[in-house]
Image (cartoon, rainbow, N blue to C red):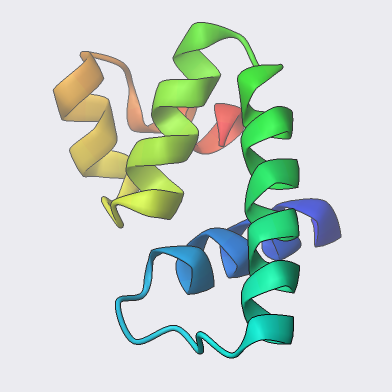
Length: 79
C-alpha cells in the first residue's frame, strides 16, 4: 500500500551512502528517518525484524523466511 511504499522509499534513501547532504535535504531526510524509526518501533518485534530485513537490508521474502524460520507467505503478509 501507499504507506509501505513511502516507508520503503525513505528507508532506501536514508541508507544510501551517496545521499544528498545539502542542509535542507539533510534536515528533511533526518526528519523522515526519525519518523520511520518511530513507526517501525511501534511494530511488534517480528514485524520490525521483517521490515528491517526486507526494506533496509534488501532481502527477499524467501531469504527473510529462511532466516527467521517462517513461511514466505507469513513474511509477505507481515511486510
